[in-house]
Length: 184
Image 1 (cartoon, rainbow, N blue to C red):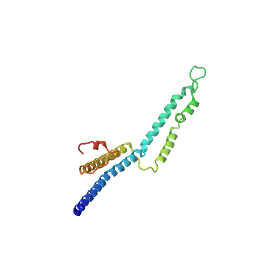
Image 2 (cartoon, rainbow, N blue to C red):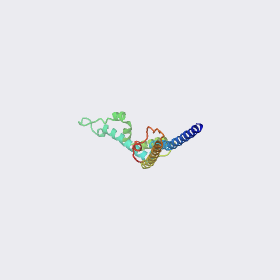
Image 3 (tube, rainbow, N blue to C red):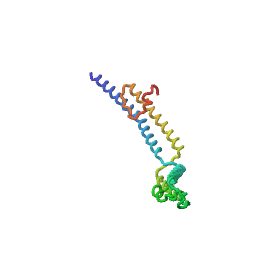
Image 4 (cartoon, rainbow, N blue to C red):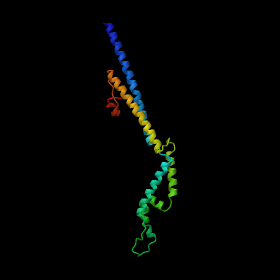
């Protein structure tokens, strides 16, 4: 009887070791997925390139100027009183409602662009790498491919464990594409 108990203890011990090894093997792609997802978040939030910053500044200023121009009546600056035409350029209203746009209308675009560029450059300083739109898209595509590979490997290992009779809990955010796939 002692020999059978010893044999069973050895079988159970090997089974526990095998289960631990499989769990450790499954953990590797899970850790890789988490690291890649974190890297993806870093790249998504990384600063844009200087050229894109300048384009964004230019677009912002153009919108502000257009909003002010819609309120401003420049023809009123040259229309005589009692002519039946508008004689109020609405300067006070425009300055109150759209001060940035009015400053642009008055010719301060270059100074404002320079000041905003300095602000943007200060914001970017120390934030790490900047990405152009193309670089960001390429890097995110590369990371997404790595995530897919790691998730596929994870599901293969989960299935192998289950085939061996070992229960495995899948991540709550595991890819349904691989969980539901008939073949990996």
